[in-house]
Structure formats: structure tokens, C-alpha cells
Image 1 (spheres, helix red, strand yellow):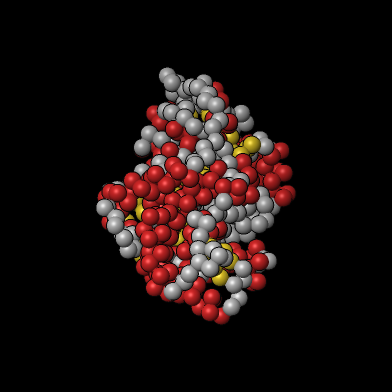
Image 2 (tube, rainbow, N blue to C red):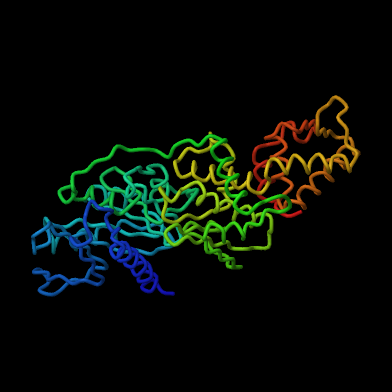
Length: 429
């Protein structure tokens, strides 16, 4: 694919994104009614200096109610580059706008990668907006639900920093030193006059107590009359009227992270990208079911789970609001795959079968003695096979329930990177 074709693919995807929002009445989420907007692709305007028409990738014309002449033109220039965008393109775009629209236009660079530091300064000084668009990213819609919030840090890392972001947003933007998570928020900043004036206070995603998540798990299990064995996740999807699609596609987001699964809340769909790791696929599916069960559609229109999301196992790790949602979905999935009552019952049964006894060291005890290691591994394997969950997940459940006393020397000072690697790698029996 040549550079022109790549640019056109980004332009087409972003145009369809805007048109889809307009057709659903969501383009600017009530602040700007869709009937006040017209969206054009390959729109031409006459340039007096050149005495000819100049073409722009995408133009959004905004009109105040009752006016025929556009009050504002929002000009989108799409640059689909694998590397960072040089300042030359930013300068050219700004100059082109200045020749056609000296006062009534706002320019926005739509990119798929990041800007070079010089390009960032030029964009800021010339008053250009910057949008990073990823068709496979998650999409924030919280502002549409009267609960606006902006993922400043997450958007900043995607647009400006060199390191890969932890999670890709479908839409992240920067203008005048501020970061935005939706097209509505950006346009409101570009031209506040068109807003209806309604302002709602910022509200972050709330903390969910463990009991609340456990109650949601209980309701889901009750809906399928769960009594034991591997939880039938496909049946749960049918019960919740969720369309489940499983494929062997290997999909990456714009930053190269493998997408394990996706949730599309508007059409109630879950996609799982199977890659041969059965237990990870089940955890991924449980995670996406969790987003639905915990009503995360209030905040998101679409969501992707990448490998890094599986490492968010503590509320303290939820530095961003988005990561708080991932933590909640992980906690839900863990409780769903290993239902507490049945887990305790089967642990007791397999413990008796193995001949494990509490000799004053704890209900489940393991140290570096070969016999204890063998018994403990057998217990993990039995529960892993019964619930179709990883040994690592079973071990985490032991610790959460206070059942395990682990005195193995290799676990006493295990480096954090090794611990995280084990969580990722130990998905199969």
C-alpha cells in the first residue's frame, strides 16, 4: 500500500466514523444537533491566490440555527504514517487553511501515529487541533451520558510521547493545551458559541466495592442455574442477549498491541480472538461479559482488551479511569470463572483426595520440600482442569480467600517482572 492509499484509508475510516455518529444523532452528543452539521469528504473551496479550487480531506460545516452561511468550518487533514509526523506537513496544512479561511475555520490534524516534537510546537502555535484516530480502539462516550470526563494522561501518551500507550483510544485529541476523549468535547472547545451552554460537572468513574462486583457475578450465575464445573460462558452470552463471535484472527491496534477481545455495547456484541490459549480466551470472554454486567456502556461505546489489561489486578493500579474499568472487569472475570462457593467445596474435595492435612502450618501449605510441591501442583492442576481456568488464576484465588501459606524461597523475593510474566504465560494447563 503506497502512502496515498494509506492516507485515503485513514481518511475513509474517519469520515465514516463522523457520518455514523451523525446518522445516529450522536455526532456532537447534543451540544451540537446533527441538523446543524454537514460533513463532506474531498471538499473543494476557491482560493483567490491560486485562482483555482483547493481540496481538503474532510470538512465539517457548522451552522447556527436559522443561518444559511456556515458559522465555522472544521477542516480535517488525515496523515496515516507509521512513523512520527514531521512539522513540514503541519506548516503546509496551516498555510492552506489560512489562504482559504482567514477567520472562520479551525484546522485539525488526524493522525495514526504521533507528532514529532517540532510539529507539536507548530500545531500549538498555529492553533491547530490534533486527533489520533484508531478504528480498533475503545471509544469514550461518557460525555453523551451527562458524565463527562477526559482521559488527559492517556490521550497525551498516545499523541505526543514516544513510548507505546497502555491502551488505544478510538478518538483522542489535543487543542490549546487540553486533551479530549470525544469529538464533541473537541468541537465544543474549538467553538463554544455553538454549544447549548449546558455544563455538567466532571465525574470520574466510581470505585466499586468487591461486594458489588460479587453480587453482579452472583446474578449472572443464577441466570444459568450454575451448580458446578466450568462456567458456561457461551450460555451466559445467550442469556444476556449478547451476540458472541469467536475467530482465530490476530488483530493489533494502532500501537501494535495484540487485541484479545472486543465489546461493542451499542449492538451488544463480544468478539474473542482465539489464539490457542483456552484459559486466556475464557478469561477474556469473562472480562468482556463483566463490562456488560457492570453497566460500563455508560462510559464506553466500544472496548478492547489487550494483554497488558490482564495485569491490572489491584484498584491501586487504576491510575486512569479507563484502567479502573479494566480492573473491575478483571475482578468480575476472576469471580465468574472461579465461583467462590463451588471453589471452596472443590478445593476441600481435591485436598482430601490428595491427602493434604493441616498440620498447623495452614489450610493449604507449600514450601520447598518435593512432596509438598508435588501435592500443591496436583491440587492446582485438579482445580484448573475442573474450572477451565489457569493455575495462576487458581493460586490467586487461594490468596484472595486466605487459604494459602506459601513458604517457597523462590516466591519470597520474586521480582515484579517475573511475577507479571507468569501471569501472562501460565494460561494453559
